[in-house]
Amino acid sequence: MTCVISTRLAPRKTLSTDSNDLKSPTGHAPAPRANRWSLLRRLPIHHVNTLIYLSVSILSKGASLFLIPIYTSRLTRAEYALFGLCQTLYWIGPPLVTLALSTALGRFYFDHRDDAGRARTTGQIASAIIVMSVGSAAIADGLLHLFPRTIGGLEPWMLRLMIWTCAALAIGEIPSLYFRVSESAGRFAALNLTVFGMTIGSTAYLMLARGMRLDGLLGGMLIGQSFAALFAIGFTLIVLRPGLDRSVLRPALRYSVPFIPHMIGNSLMVGVDRWTLEYYGMRDALGLYTLATQLTTPIQMATSAWNEASSPRFLAAWRDGGDPAARRMLPRVVFGFIASSGGVLLLILLAVPLLRFFVGDKFQASFGLVPWIGLGLVVGTLFSAFINVLFLRKTTRIIPILTMSAVAVNFGLNFLFVPRWGAYGAILATGIAFAFRSAIMYVFAARALGGQPAGNPLGAERPEV
Image (tube, rainbow, N blue to C red; front, top):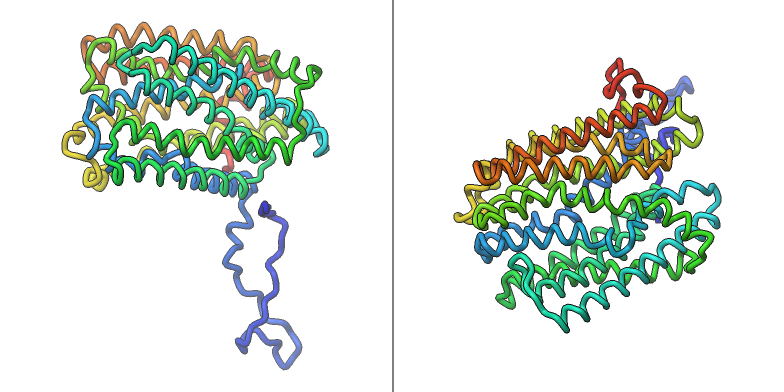
């Protein structure tokens, strides 16, 4: 059941035995007492949803954060490095096998004002995601069984686990996306917290009770995401209107296919550095780098939560008020990204002395990388605000060109800096590439809205958030 909080709700009357609450002998009612929820009710709904999304993301998407004490005590630096490489495949796999149809599901929802139209359109797209994910995973698993090989230190059994985890990730995203765009934050929270519990519980059991190492980590990921995928299939069959109607899928694919290079490019933006370290044989440094990146995950969670809450509002504002409404709202969105990412980075740095107690001795050196990785993420997060302008215009053809341009910069700088400075070279290269990507996205967003958004990216005045 979804809880919608409105700023127009008045405080409910409550029965009290306090004599101060009774009418005076003159018949005048006393002044109303302050309601404990008055502050929450005065917040805009998308800010309340941001708090919900952030809280859920810290738990569900940050399962690995809670398992860091287990990881750093059970894994070697080399095994942690392999886990870091596995993560990059988790990011690349889902959009590749589904032709990035998840982007169409989130966007085409807003083409209908009635529930029936939304259910039909999203149901068709969800069905295609399920069929493509399962089919691609089955084919890849069969080929790997017939022709086993090792890729970048990842053995065939690791690759097979990752193949099915990628399929589960793609399918499990369906209900989460639907709940987000429909602003059903309560349902979003319930689902993701359940997946979090399954993932962290199964991983802890396999690594501690069964004494497994990297295989237990990857197995726990598969169990948790498989639960999410099964729920998504049931959700599609029961709540949505499943089918494979060409009249829906053709425009959806025309919209989503240009996102494939973009989404893969996004994965490469945070994966090129890892594979470059692996290429130059710096596996110990890669293990430290992977852990440091995990410790900055709350920054991505905060910006993701803000994006999940602000994007539907931004698209709805454009739908109802056109370009002027979008220009007015964009500075608030940008300010939210800066405030959320910068604020969380500061909290992480303040928490470092405490975090040291939860990390194994052989991984303590990773803390020196944290502030610099975090700073790069703060700069890079701005592109998410500007790319929403291209989403609402459905001008997705330019997006892969812009993204792959940034990836090319990232590739070149990593291969230039990593041999000289190791992990710090990877951080510098990726940070510069993040800044480049945000800058070019801003330029094209300004053009799409017919001029500089609201005067400048931060607005002439401090926006109210």
